[in-house]
Amino acid sequence: MEELPLGYRFYPTEEELVSFYLHNKLEGRRQELQRVIPEISIYDIEPGDLPQLSGELCRGNTEQWFFFTPRQAREARGGRPNRTTATGYWKATGSPGYVYSSDNRVIGLKKTMVFYIGRAPSGRKTKWKMNEYRAIEVHESSRNATSKLRNEFSLCRVYVVSGSFRAFDRRPLEAVTRGTQHLLGGPHLGDAATTPAQDPIIVEMTSSPETSYSGGDHVDYPGTAASASWGRILHGNDRNNWIGPAQIDLKVVVPRQNRHA
Image (cartoon, rainbow, N blue to C red):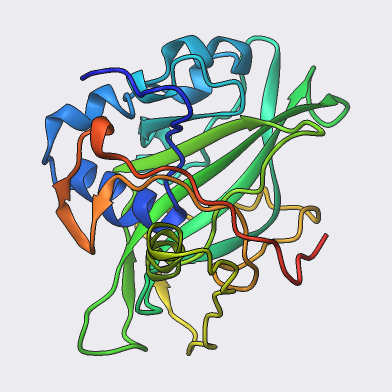
């Protein structure tokens, strides 16, 4: 895999992470994606050591890194996952949020975690954060049908919060594509994406639910606010059609609107 040219960044949307990368990992397809998002036991590794283990497209990135991580054996047996490292622990914050597709289907579940140095409950909060994504299988024929949460693998986005940190793109892929087309076709930019309200989805848990959530970060649902959109790895909506890094579009920056704190 060749290196990205200067000015290019690997900045997939949440829809791309779940519907393409995580989907193919769960189905055992496209082994070359291991070079983009490697598989590691993320909770066994200190956050500061994760950047050097990242995939080829994230080498040298100082903002965020992506990893697949398998479900822990104790979680598969119905227990709670162990998120403790040698120097600290990951603590879930806020409530889980849904990830939506471009046609407004729920395709995944996201939880946010913060790394603390020390031992719970008196650890010291750091700037290391993580979004953990899990895929939800929903039957196309029914919006209210019981859905299955896929737990074999999750996809983790690790990042460091700083004053210059860019907002992560939560918009559906369709909105990102539209913004890219505006850049290539003319100067018109700034269309904000909106996601219609959906009926609630019942998720069938394949292991015991975690109880480690606590109040904290506000969760922005995809489509509620415009943010930065970046080069795409998907071609259209075909999750099996992967484009190499040399074909990634130039980044597009869309003005933020109605951004919540």
